[in-house]
Length: 305
Image (cartoon, rainbow, N blue to C red; front, side):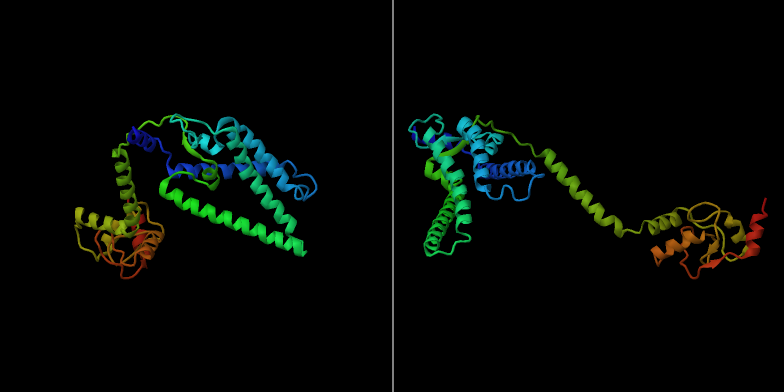
């Protein structure tokens, strides 16, 4: 019977990360409530709330405590994660909510502790009397011991997964699921497919800038469309000057690179600046010199019917 109860407790035990997430959600809610509250006094005199800030914060946290832990046995962060507090001191095996005294002491330890720490800091900040100095040292000693106890409790929590805070351990309350958790079946086919495509996309993004697409296209064009004819004659140059060998349009400011083909000046210049080893996409001739097309050949090309 004892082993069965222990196994049931292990299966329903709240994960450590869920308990820590609940604490972080509570802190975020407190910051959000306080920022919204201070916005209400944005148009008033600056520093209006500074004198009574610890009391105002304690009142707000007490208001939140009344409608969360006191009435629902769970903080806001725990409610989001389907968690609530259970009385660990109860001998019953079934769920037992925290008692009224535990809830009240929870408010005293959390809300009252924060108020006392802030108020004592303001009280001893500008006091230089010997009695106040001793009291300040005592308060600092108590706060340091509580911090040390919280650290030790956190290390134990990481090992056992129970009592995330020192207050929970002292009061005997721990986190349990509000509703039974159903076992989820996780399929990794979709995840593997996404990881595969993500890795393939990253590989392409890394590889594509390293490939000279224009040069590769010129190589393929030279292989697929072999050159027929011999370069060197002005008539052949004029015959091939009807269109740019790169853009396929009528050549603007026609230039040659040492072969019979004609290019727009901007096309061949930008290609040469992009790739120093640029070659003609038609015949594969390397750039020897960038020269403008002779005017006589250009006029002869224009007069061709």
